[in-house]
Image (tube, rainbow, N blue to C red; front, side):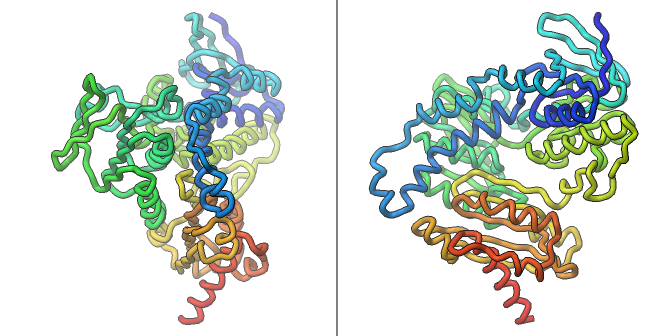
Length: 476
């Protein structure tokens, strides 16, 4: 059995693990990056990239149809086979050679195989051929193993061999009908994509859609999905699921039965920690790894958890943000360089708490950052809530005929700064980073007045939100 020592061992070679390894190597450390599947991880092959590729073609087609003059040129429908070919190009046909080449070029040692803790600072990697290598970390181990789709405890669901996000984003053939259990981002995005393919989609949610976002976001997406031909069942329980020779039968709480060729379970994520040897270091297998803001796992001075596995913010960009902080932190500690762990310092993930941006690529898109009005109230802030119809902005009316959307700004009255912003409408993701800067930098409202949006663009929504806020304040 071979034994090798590295300064840092990273479990999981997705974008989070890759970033942590890269920053540590740049800081002068030796790094082993352990991966048993494809280098590039969930985001590259089964999540962010393929899902957005599946959504983009229909989004572009709908956008053209919303502009008079261009609409007349659209004489055909969506070429689904071409969409799948384009999706495959982004996943490189599920081949990770280019990603592995990048890892090597970055000076990172890629160790292929399944890594499990076998003791403090020690990881035993079982290669595909069964051989084992014991890796020892001189300074730290970072767990970046991500999450798996959560299958809820619904009678018969597991036996029905449901699709998860992986099957939905990598499908080679498009089913004629698809039932989706769930109401979150994966559920709504895949409903949008498959409806555009001509699939008969039924979306079953036990509550409303996009819970945790501003209520109007879920309401507008619900309306749009129905307009796109999706059957949306809200506040509906799924009692049992049964796979038959003809497909899948789903019994609902009221006793009615939905039939479909396939069923997609889109009800959340669970940590991929059940088989990485956590018991060998005193932790519970299958648990989330709780950390402080330096991403150090509680009770350890050498173990870090980054990305989805720590349950702080289950988004690739937030995981990469954490990874950059951790890679630089471990390198700084190893070299004796100064460490910055105060809020908003170089080596912390302060933004995870109240400055997380997110886009849901439905049509209309939902782009949000920071706190919702409800979350801000629960956190004890005294707030003002400012709403504005996006379609009333001159740039929006030029962008698309009949442009419909809504914006909300949540203001902390005591500090006069923006706590959160939500946009719903076509291509509102392009508005999000300005909002992210305003929230993260805590730019005073008085200074935001001097950030003049160009006319006539959709960004003029910022002027309208500020004007509406001023008018609300004057009435008080």
